[in-house]
Image (cartoon, one colour):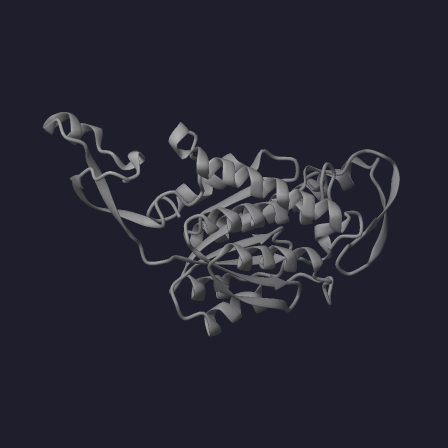
Length: 295
């Protein structure tokens, strides 16, 4: 957990997300249902006449109007869906302007996990730096998800480096059941295209890049000392030099293109969410971009 954010602040953030998630789901009958997992949990089975005690939200008004007798739609539970969240908790997560990347990652992870609870989906977690730091097998239920989120908040990373390959290799080796794998990372990591290609053979994969606007360019503020949050290396940079600022932007732009091309190559739905962004529309866009349309 980044030093700049207190345990209490992060817990309060998750509580707020929980309240908002419940409100979105319970608001279904008011027409404001915007669940990320819409379509999972139950599927249409049949239509029958209304029986006292049936949920009025299940009434099929077209059939009711046609026959003059209330009819309701029947649903059956779908096979439970399994989601694995791969969260990059490396040292670069401490960076951020309006909020840290770690805090943004936690917000996204909590939103996805708590939404899944309401649709009886199973959620698992892999915390990764340059190694797998924690693995929590997928289970369903609110208590499990709260424990999972708590683990993200309280975990103290053993390393600062970043490498998604150990986590992706673990998925290939240990997770046999077809699942949706959601990557949460700034992708400032070694190339992991080989591992992604292997996972795509058996699992559905989505990717969320968590970034910060200040990473995209160097401001002209004179001499500054930059420190790599993962390696600890420090260098003195003259940001007043236009050539240095241009080279920095070119390198960042090149790295961004490489990530986008890798995701496109393996047909992995991908969004970039910056700290401070309104994230729900981007999450919903991501979910609808996957094969089959939605989670």
